[in-house]
Image (tube, rainbow, N blue to C red; front, side):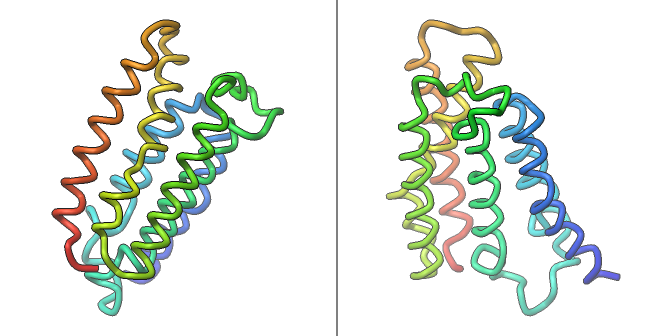
Length: 171
């Protein structure tokens, strides 16, 4: 039974991102992806007892990095797919968002290869910060001060990353 719950939780993180980023506004979709799918559904947060013993303590390199990257990749649906109803949201930031996505993916690859989460300090998740800032401004119809909003989101994400690195010293 525990194995089934674990697999369902992981499957949920695989199945839902393409749906949410295709249907919902990018700000809501990314919040759902980060807060619900990555923050609650991910087994290492609230379902630790359901993680197989051979994976416990190694969740970052066993499944979490891949599922985080999968969620961020699906976040590119409204950025790159011109038929998406929210394609316009990233009109002026498309190249920036894509570049920051690739920056984060390089960081994930280094974390995975060297089993050292400190690479996340170098390859900060500016993708998430800028993505949220741009989509936040669109969602709340903020036309001015997008740069200031982005700076606030970047600060929050950088502080979050320092906290996460302190938690994940060993991979």
